[in-house]
Length: 142
Image (tube, rainbow, N blue to C red; front, side, top):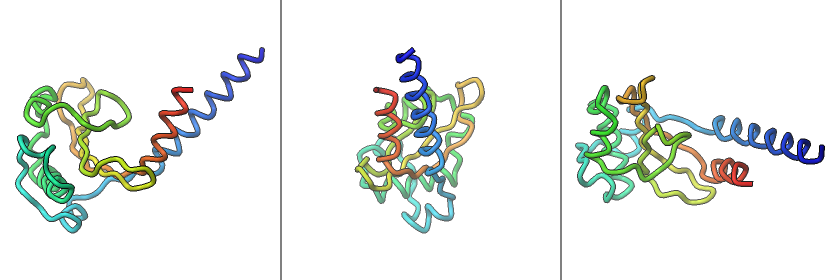
């Protein structure tokens, strides 16, 4: 009985932390991205090695050009390289624009898959606070 109660408490904590982490996320529009970083032609070969500002400007270019919309997700990963960030599930490719730092905003470019998990349905720039998502991960690890 004690194990069931502890399991239920853990499950409720996980649900609460998950909901809290999703409430804090925001997506940036093209206009906002251009204002924050400018725009720079996306180069898949150098994207991951660029500065935060150049990554942000390249991400803005991806939103504007819609270059990868309807592309095969495997082809995107071949061009850019393996994802170096995480968003909700391994089926959603995410690349960092800014490195993760506790209690600081982190920006990512994410590739939302279609319902078959084969092609890119949408590309978004996401902002979140790393501390909230770390709580989610810790809750599942407990």
